[in-house]
Image 1 (tube, protein in one colour):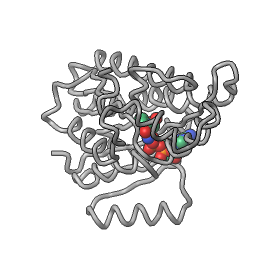
Image 2: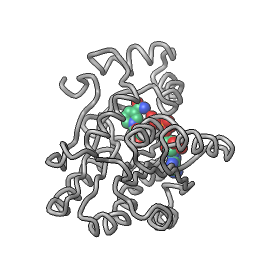
Image 3: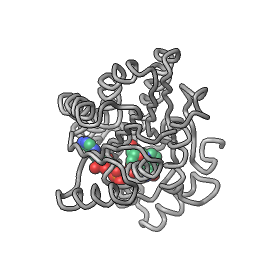
Image 4: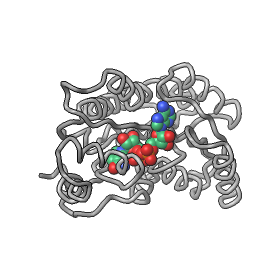
Length: 260
Ligand code: NAD
């Protein structure tokens, strides 16, 4: 049923976003990849996905901190692929520091990329979905949309904001065949997590191994990292017809973290 739908996944050249893009490609969607990577790697990624799944793969390097580039990306998607059916707001960055030492530029960038970008993409994409009276918006939030951790003030604030945005938009479009949900992963071992381990070690004065054991996985009762494939499978389910009555939901996939 997802065959030939158009799915745009922000921040999809690595980590969770790439996993979700692969999932939608495997389901027969035409996909739009977004963001960093050297041009040769991106060209190879596009060619591989297009060949493997016999789909169209477009790419737009829009910076999610820029409203104008986001708007242009949605327009371009419409022009190149004929619409936008599934929007996955996945791009995100992190910075770890005590709040009274938190660099202003990092705060602004995290709020822009992790929260405001979803407002801009949704604002530009909804008219296209309303025309078809069908759409799926999936916001990749975090367990940090539900609970806090020290030293992550901007990230936790942004992700809680994504939860509020998700619920609000879900109510606004509930009668138009469009669902809006947030997925809240616990720790997934992607570049974003790997990169914050040294900073957390520094902030807490402990080793990097101790950060993995006593900080990251300490929060997850399963003591297992969530996998990219599990997050992709949940995204696919939310995009399907069986999930048509799930909207405005903030869905944990975090090994029991927020049950505590
Ligand atoms: P990642 O660093 O592998 O991927 C982040 C993606 O965002 C990359 O593709 C990167 O290029 C992109 N990005 C960064 N800045 C951008 C910008 N200005 N414009 C466009 N794209 C930009 O990290 P990830 O772990 O795969 O994270 C993906 C999402 O999942 C994020 O929103 C993150 O907050 C969320 N998340 C991750 C975890 C985890 O444990 N890894 C847990 C919960 C939530």
